[in-house]
Image (tube, rainbow, N blue to C red; front, side):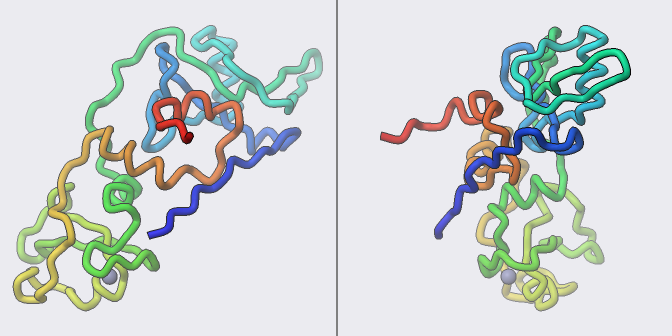
Length: 194
Ligand SMILES: [Zn+2]
């Protein structure tokens, strides 16, 4: 399996709308990874004016009001520590991330949807333990059947991942847009290449 790591895009002097700020907790770790804690420039400036965050790094992009101008923050840190959640939210993105964006029946990465291992019509729940990533072909083939009847079993038994599980997989699938100033805070625990 080849994993292409997308190089970070540099968009200096970009429009304010494409300048989200990475939000760090008071310990300088991202407030959340999945999804990555990002605020719009409006929310970020509001938090700056309310004195809730420190500005750690800035874009070159400037926004102007009639009386003043501000460089948009690219990284801010909360002044008050927030206890991070230990359990990732059960979201579509996080299920895909747990399953490494591949169909749990055939490994395909195209046209991914979700499959209830025990079908809903048979009482299967929409939960970490019963939902897997599946391509639309496999989803169609399995349909409303139990795994034993369809003779289709997921490659790994679905489970509720920890933040660390997702973080490990997340390194393989970085977000499309990563500003240079974010890198010090995002991948600090990645092994250094020699
Ligand atoms: Zn498939």
